Length: 166
Image (cartoon, rainbow, N blue to C red; front, side, top):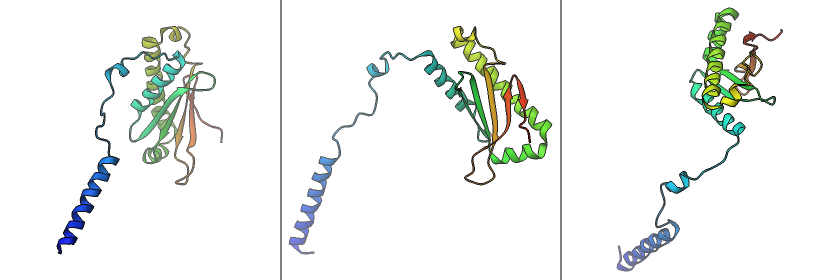
C-alpha cells in the first residue's frame, strides 16, 4: 500500500470517527429520576379500576388462553376468555357438559378475583356491587380460518353459562 493511500485511509477513519461522535450523544440517561417517580398524579376511580382489571386479565392469562377484564359500556365488569386452538379442540371433543364445567370454573375464579379486588381496594364500589347484575363475560374460540375473528361459543351471565341458540 502506498504512503498516500495509507494517509488517505487514516483521514477517512479519523473523519468517520469524528462524524460518528457528533451523531452519537456523549452521555445518555439510563434511569428515571426518583423525583419524577415520586410525583403525585390524580387518577379517577374509574380509570384506576379499569387499570387494575386490565392487569388482572394479564395475570390470569396463560399460553392456553388469554383473559381480558374491563368495564363494558354499562359499567359492568366484563371478561373475555379467548381459548387457543389446542384447548378449543379438546373442549370440542369433551362435549358441552365438560366444557360448561371448565368455563364455570374459570368464570367463578375471575368473579372471585374481581370481588376480592373491589372489597380490598374499592370499598365504596364493593358496597354497590351485585355479582349477578354487575359481572358478565364471553368465551371465544378461534375462528375457522387463520385470519378469522374469534367465534363466541358461550356467555357467563347471572352466574351461569348460557349457550347461543343454534
